[in-house]
Image (cartoon, rainbow, N blue to C red; front, side, top):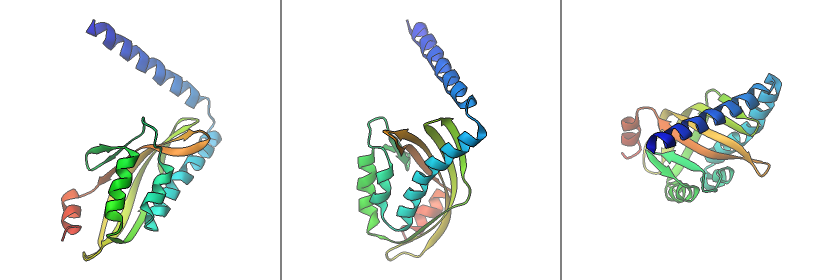
Length: 169
């Protein structure tokens, strides 16, 4: 019985993968660029909001649907969890400057784009010295109800121990 389920699952994944590839292969480079540019605006707005210390405003570009998941510090979060965590830390942030060093993107379908962004960050918390570091943000942006929304994201800080030490002086 388990072999049949595994076989069915693998066949389903292969068919899904092939259908995504066929759709993606039918897009011209110009169409792919237009799709990326359109989805990119959503990601830019999130980082602009963050740089303006409007963390919850930036989350307006995240999906609240039950199939959307966000990862931070090894934990899978819902949008509501993200809002609570940003509300808690938001008042202690004095300065935050995210600088996207390069835009790495891939069109997964006409309605879905994956981004992997290396970011330089400057952050100053109340009563703690400014910290300058680097992280990588990755996200899946998908058009839902004619609006681009982030449906998955993940932050990965370089030198996590250094970051934790610097931000908890």
